[in-house]
Image (cartoon, rainbow, N blue to C red; front, side):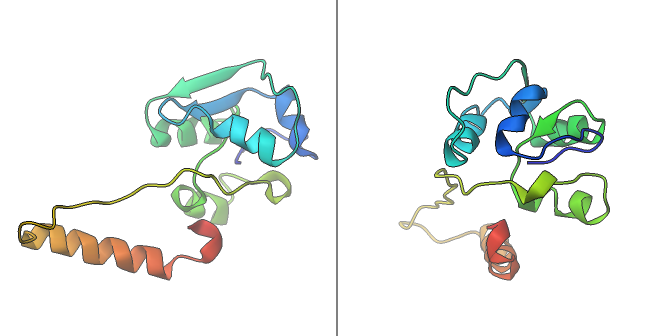
Length: 130
């Protein structure tokens, strides 16, 4: 969870007092967050949906609400103070991404370069960012 100019988040249930920012293709993340933190009757007053994580992040930086995004996407913003994670709240989502490619044909060189890069990035990330 990240926000910039918004304060006052001391407990996970405090999120209900703020506008929430969401990626429209991952609409259940706030519900997952609420469930992971034992927030019952999770009915937020306002959720603004964006089509890209970059827009969610920019809105959070502008102080428009609280954003729930993968930590790896905002590591720089957290490090340089543009965003903060109040009280370190977060959760491990049950959702995952899978990279697949056909086994019945040889990999193109560009695909192999991408796979090598992706594996390197994942393997060098701290476990809490994966």
